[in-house]
Length: 117
Image (cartoon, rainbow, N blue to C red; front, top):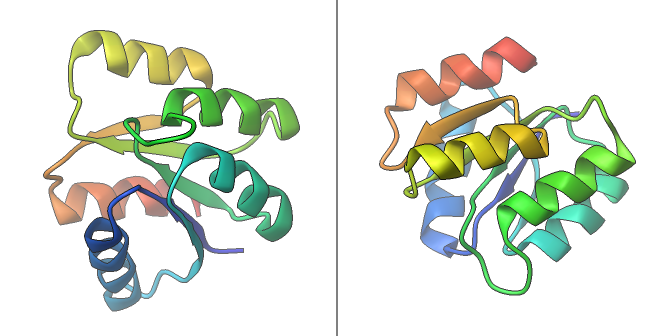
């Protein structure tokens, strides 16, 4: 019932896992692309998903749309370096609850996560 971390960069997944663990937030799983994120979401039913946008196989916007089809109440926070306004709007339209730009402020991300836990 914790967090699913979705990012194609192993370094970023590891960094986020440690940051969440240090703040008492359980990471229940990780995925490295959107297709894997959908499968892990079905398998793990996390409370919150952190979703990167630019990933191989299936991007974060498409994965967000698919997860919302499975669970319209899914809580997805997009974490991406692509902070352009159009991408933020697209992510929110896809069903994301929030958008945090990388490199993110740790406190801001933790606060966003805690809003949904």
